[in-house]
Image 1: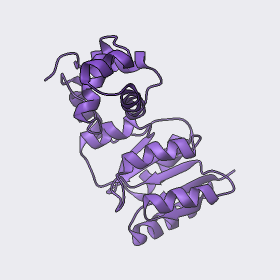
Image 2: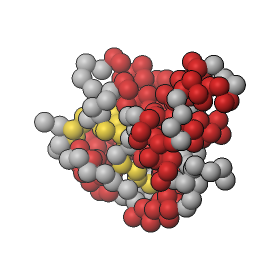
Image 3: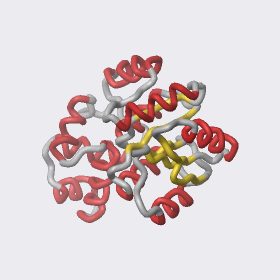
Image 4: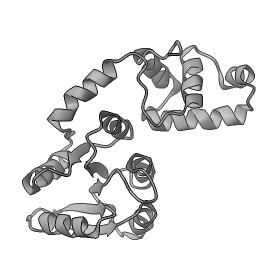
Length: 213
């Protein structure tokens, strides 16, 4: 059975090139494409079967690829997301990994490397550029590092979560409504790609966030 690939990139010429590369293989097919985040969400909802792989540019005209990745995971949870980008910024890579992305490929990769990455991700592997992986590990080891997506307010609330405060207690301390705190907590869990407050607290401790920088 062919690996079903969906393309999201705002450059039509690049999408055409990727389509030619992918469809020149015997085990892959392109089942759809889009140039913006909104187009992608609409097109994916219309597909009779979800794709296996979503090949996604990190910089789109209407949204950031990482933000879109969160929405894609909710819409098509069984699809694996692979980011194809010119960005060699380790913060972009970290945010992508936190969003549940399974592959991160730079656009200077060869056609063979792109095809190999798609196959490896489909087999359940994670694919990251070797040149970026060491920088990512160095960044993760830096005290106080947080994903670029977390707002200052979310970092503040994450610290209180790590200290064991309830939503009601956090709301009282910060002068917010409990519903507002609940909304922030949901966003924090989604951005950190964790399932519970306990996992978020563990992340905060590991990242050295218990004390403001």
